[in-house]
Length: 501
Ligand code: 6PG
Image 1 (cartoon, rainbow, N blue to C red):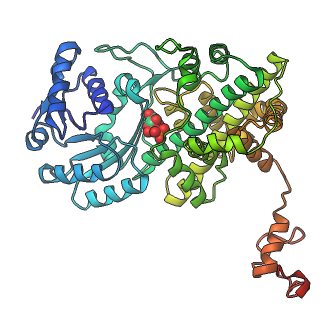
Image 2 (cartoon, rainbow, N blue to C red; image 1 turned 180 degrees about the vertical axis):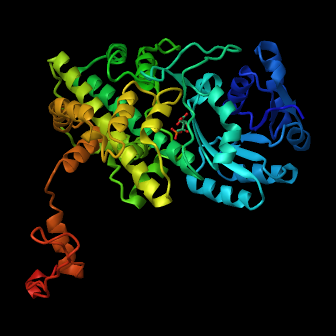
Image 3 (cartoon, rainbow, N blue to C red; image 1 turned 120 degrees about the vertical axis):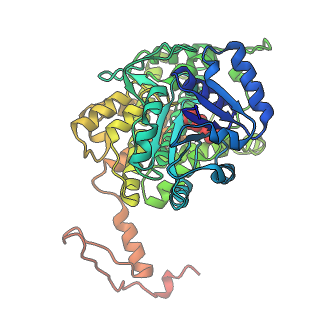
């Protein structure tokens, strides 16, 4: 029994996380359903990984489990869904009281709640941990969002903190420099305890919902520069590279700059122009939008991003419709610097709305699930390692430090100011998009949210009237205290001339 931890599932994420753990001085037992994959991985490690002697492969589950120090910590990085249950059931006969299973996949949080209950009845601890950062994050420092019992967390904590991304505790700047065998030391570790049962996977799901809209907004900025200004991909890439130096600085902006400037290896112009425009999705964005609907959280920009992917997937239909359905001719804009600046405003303001919606949703969920989450800390966990890591997350941490009960991010002075300054440009961009028939559903949804949120009065008065008219659903009155409900026996009711026949 000499392994500090075990890991099941040697696909890309599993392999990289195992190497990261080994780099931090832990001995890690690894297992894969197909032993060939495990053997190949071990061979590759021997050939090129400085910490290879700490990665120990096992071809059978019994020897794998028995090689781990008790209480055992076993990380699962298998495909989310039924494969997780199958793996847990296969492990169970070998586990002992107090052992801990850690699910690092993109699990649905309700599955995590169920699994924790089922395993608790058997004396096994279960930690659902969001893991973000893709391949490189897993290898050199992911963002980790663990949840479960405090007891289980205290057992996992040292390893999780060691392997996570590190940021400067004051400025939030990610500490760079990890390389095989030489992990980054010191700094704030992007691995804070989130809460009980499914909280970690829930937060990871919302992270992905924000990831979806963040990506969609960047795509719209690119599309507007291309269509309104006729800019080639590499020139747009340079604008993103420039934006990456300021408040928009983020991993997604940085990779966008690189992607846009990438020439097609086949030699035909820029690669991005030759990539088919149909987006894939594995479900986490859709779960976020669906849950926002269930909880009554106005996350319309996140939903817009999911719908935009769905629409993109109808390529053949879109090609056909483009020949049939009319739109305006695009009139190219001439004042390039002004339009680029306005697009930047649209991007930043919409991005703030995206985060405002994400945090608003998490707030609803913490009430529904009886969690107590620390929003400032969440922003800090996302500051390094994960896909949505961005400089402006520090501003979110600061906002919640200033007011832990902040109702909406847009009400924090820094963000209020950013919205007030950017909103004119944002509107101009959407107006141009509409006039020229260029789809910009992310920007538009975010603006609708912004304008709805800042409206003291909305036409829902009429809506309540309609509900009361046809269904006696009652309404409250502006001149009476909240909670008093009225109903009118509408005089028009039943008048034959109002019948839709
Ligand atoms: C991460 C990512 C990662 C992945 C998602 C979304 O945080 O590392 O969110 O989990 O990008 O699975 O994938 P889809 O775009 O395929 O839904």
